[in-house]
Amino acid sequence: STFLASVTAAKPKIADYPFTTLHPNLGVVRIDAREFVMADIPGLIEGAHAGAGIGDRFLGHVERTRVLLHLVSAREDDVAAACRTVREELDAYGHGLSDKPEIVALSQIDLADEEMRAEKMAALEHASGTAVLGVSSATRDGVEPLLRALMAVIEAARAEHARDADDQREPWQPLAGDG
Image (tube, helix red, strand yellow):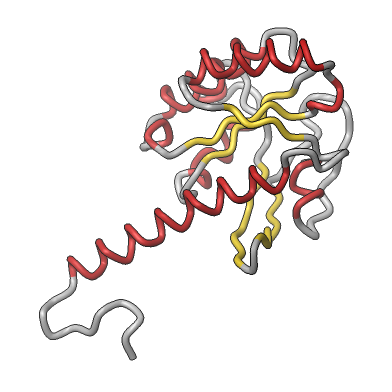
């Protein structure tokens, strides 16, 4: 929620306790004269796919996204376990969520010293199998590179969707974007 509030005009409830986010929050992100809608959903806990917590109520909405941004707090003792829990819940839920492109970021990096940040980012990279970005909503450190990474994935998905739509059209139908 803090990240959404820092990159959009959305005003989600922000507090330092579990289950602060009870409803999905939406905001429009603008980066480099382009924009996309970002959704903040309640956090997923172990067993969410089977109804634990409240995140399972919103997983259906996540099916419509083009990319997943997984923020793991630098305040977590075991960032790798936190990452694996969400991955396992996405896999268990099914419906193609675990196949979606994902960007993983260590958030709240302003709360960790350089050594701790490096350790946690390495652990996250190992657990996720992907490069990890660092971000701080409070200081805005790493925000623009993260938004640009999201935009790149979204634009690639949009282009692929347009190609697929053009491939599916009847020969007499105009191309996507044609008048």
